[in-house]
Length: 491
Image (cartoon, rainbow, N blue to C red; front, top):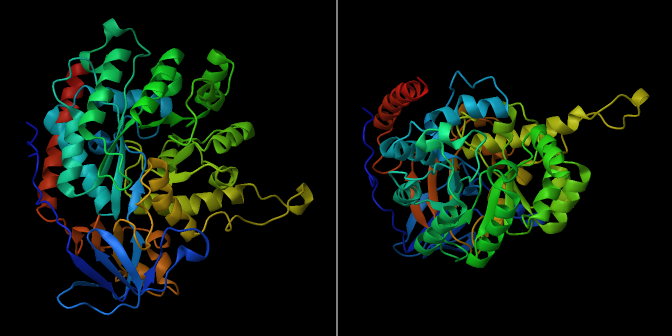
């Protein structure tokens, strides 16, 4: 039996009227150019916003956080996840497979095995993992929907995020098509009708969506994969419905060469060209992955302002490749970071993702180096990504693709979403620049504090009301239950 996961185990955090963060060793702001660092060393938070940054004197009775020997970043913004996969880490059946066979071996095999309690537990585990890495905003691409579903997975996700004090964007996934005959599928794998999909999106927008620039809840329309999940005319209907509702569009695209193969064979177009034909490009659209792109596709994405959720660890784990982020950014593509689902990224936290993004962009550039005799002109790729670039992608970049204009940077007037990292682990000792430690040193640094909208959601590496040992025990029991259910369904 899977242990039940109560709906609200955490006390609701409340913002301090005035809070002074004192004596930070380094402050990275998420801003571009000369403002990417601030000398500080102090930040004042009042009524959920950043009121001032500089050398600040404490006010009478003001709450304080000592940030001595700590680095302060904007809270990370994760723009692509599949939280239900947090109970599917390291599945041996899919561990060494590339994307297409992996989909059948792991996420599709287990999908029908999730019940309400297991889904809630998976969401909680994923959100806690993100929170403890300093993440304040999560966009989850949830595609666990089917006709007659006995629980509301959307409501569970919003409830779990709210209980932890996190900003949450539900990317409402789903499909009206399947690659198998519907009559042969179990109920939990059957596709929805377009009318049912659009009606549920409207329900979710009416119930949850807040258009405010610092909203705690948002909804995006997110058919799972444009080339496979819906008919072309249905994609166009989705795009028009989303824009009528005032919400954004999200999906997977060009993760592997199979996207290119499919688009060319079925539609005589590139994947990006196909999306352009069906109104799926624009500043209100962002795609996960975008690993395999032709030069003209990069130009189309940039010209339209379409964004990317860069997922380097999942793309590496599945052997898909490395997205050319410098080329995309130079073309005008808004860049953000996403951890993707834990079934293809066993380190589904933003610190690990940022570290991988920093290293892999450099490695990608270095792979293009050639000796002089073969026309080469450079030795390596260490200029491909700086720590400050990665922080900007993972904070301000994420807020931009989600349309949260008061989130993602540390400056006066912005929402007080910030992570304070302790640098007291040996991996940080000896650093000449403490500001790079959270990204460059590898491994998760301990959180001195995490604030979201001025609310203290974690302090001294602890989440109030969270028993990690109990959460781990629940996870182990749930993995056993999922495996048993999946085996019975396959029999």
